[in-house]
Image 1 (spheres, rainbow, N blue to C red):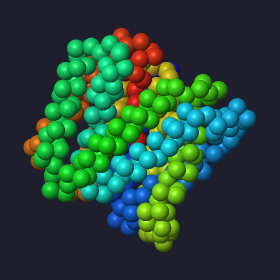
Image 2 (cartoon, helix red, strand yellow):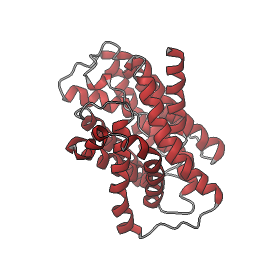
Image 3 (tube, rainbow, N blue to C red):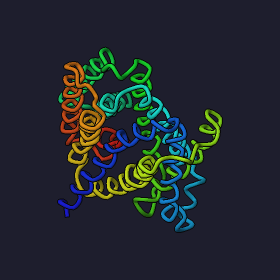
Image 4 (tube, helix red, strand yellow):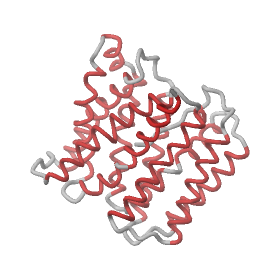
Length: 297
């Protein structure tokens, strides 16, 4: 049973990692806000059967906590991919690896115990992010790095909000409802920013949009929910690092991103630091935030 759970977690990490290279491809033909809108429209259509299946699940649309989580989810994606428009795939992917360190810091602020190993991981991940932010590659700008880091803070706020969400009858209920709320949030923002999205896109871009909606959003969330519910939080957390690794490898191999020494060292520090954070919290209580592994799509 655990082997299937680990396969599910690995699948989730791979699917999330594909979000950055497919996003970069889509950005060649449309604005970031329109890309996020179409991504969530596709994901919402796929999520609808899970969100509308019963009165109990539909009642989640009236929950203030779930509504806020959905809004944060949509806005976080918009900020993240506006950032991707100004950075390379590799930089954007590696910065995501700092998420476990942010979780540990927020846990301490909220009065939870954080181990020494976790603090060492926080220090390493922070140094890695500073290296990347201070000397990004030639395809990245300080604005893009700032937006990418800002998106992580929004994803952290989303995680903190989800901790207060009501119990649901099945694991897909809240993710499915959140995706639909996120789509409704992104729609007016995208129209105000850039008007109606262009739909006359090339076949590869449409395939990338479908992949983002079905694979990198709905399937990744479902696989993560299944796997994380069946293994320990520390074990599940290790799989977060598949996302930045997949994204960075795609950036270098498919998009010709230049892997500078600072970028390579920063990426190693972020990934190694986040592993230390996750493994350092093996004894965290189930309700603690650092025991709640946060996927960052």
